[in-house]
Image: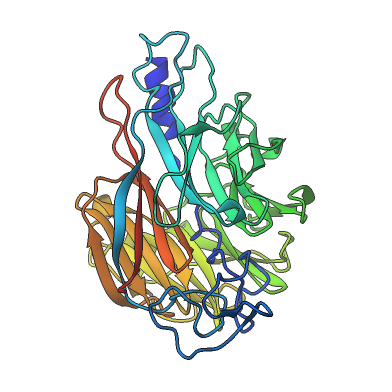
Length: 454
């Protein structure tokens, strides 16, 4: 009974992927990109690059050929996408966490929170398993793949860490991918997973202890982690170039004299040059108390302005799923709803540089709240890819720079819960798990790929 509860507890929290990190592709940012310097790693691969001097040669507008034709650091961006490969099984039944008592843990083979990552410009999928609370075992696993989704070796354990609650993946660079998790002593921690899927040395952040936190510690933007506490305080942590803790900032979100209030969901952030924005849903506990709170921040998480609260009229509730810097400010993705007459579903909210809503909400689907699927977003060129896990499979919605729907593509699959999205090497990669519904049986981990028509 305890084992079932522990595994179900694992599944209650959502993974924070590229969308929530204000993430970009794994290629170098464009010189005119407001995100330049905030994310991205290596240079775009050969194609538009002259091999003699390793400089990019402009060949014209971007076309679907696997090359960086316009030398902006991205491959095949701003083109209509279609299903390319998948879903491919990454994990069938490898791994379990009940070696000492295999007869007593029905959930110890269930995989949760699959994340597609690109440490060192290589492709991998990582996940963790449910636990047996009576006998702690390593719970984190992964598998490397080619960019064409061909498995590169077998499933491997990421190491001895007991990643008990949730595992969030952040940005990648040449050294590895930043991940956050909760250790066996219930301390939220972070570390770097290397390109060969070896774990590093964890650093614990006790202020984010989940006993008082509605949201686990999670990557927010390149070089920035964060969590919130039930007393209305946000803890933001800046990391240096060696992925070591460099700055700690506590932001009190309460108004003077306010006794109640807490962050009521996942926080997101994006960095725009030498400034950024942190956004989260906030609940004061009053009938009119569900609002959005935003704070202007520095790249290392220091507040540079006062917390701003606002209602996203006509919607009374929004659960953020991603925040991205744009030329005119930021674009916030999320799902929620309002009064009975207001459609519920996924929306995009334009914000100015100070976090104030600067235009009308854009609703790009129209579902009842209890039918809203789990989703994740990634920036692609001047637009976005928004991927949702539904009962019908995967749905990829391409949106323009304002969040307006351009194209919807579907793939038959059996995703359950959260999805993870990565844009790299001219393709959108999506990782997910199938439902954990068979006692003592493993569920599979999958990955799919979408790219432009070639």
